[in-house]
Image 1 (spheres, rainbow, N blue to C red):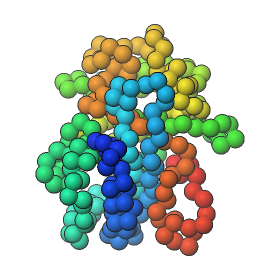
Image 2: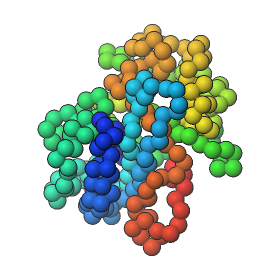
Image 3: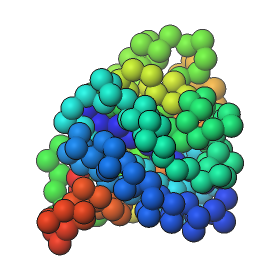
Image 4: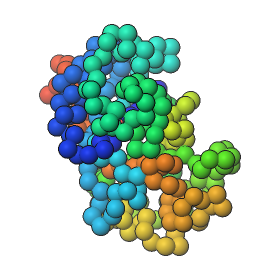
Length: 265
């Protein structure tokens, strides 16, 4: 199993503060409390939106995606409980900087633009396109998307449409090189249902794919006229990553620190 957190800063003015806190304090606290239960612990810094697009239209998250890969079940010993029991330090401005609901960093309530977190199986629920792609096949810009369905919609029926109608239509797009998706296990922040990755060789290829009218069937329950038919920040959020983790914390704090980490998927 793995856990993921997608984080967005309300203002990039907060980037120096949050980077220092994350890299000099939070990482070591996490390794000290749950490191023995982890196979991998790495993070990606988000890269900018492709040119010509409004980040707000795509629910763009601008800071980091953090992944923890567990070899023991985190459900048995929830990482939040372990961390709180040892008095983890949070910046006083944490909630304001990340847009969290409530008054404490671990309040657990979710608001649009707040961090998205949840547990996933390591194996993809659906591997739609591009299995076997290697680094020799081209460069990869990864569009990472968390989504749910509008309130009142039958989740299983909507997800069936997404898998059997939308995904095949997306796979027909020639600029899309890789596409896989995993359903969250249990409750995720904001009741998100899936985390998906769609890979393109460059930002212009992504832009041409998602903005061409008539390529994708609009579902009857759509809450937005245009693709992806969901409300940004409320029903879906996304970010863009490169191939290699920005930080591989388990490796860089071990004897393997000199070995490059690439495409740890």
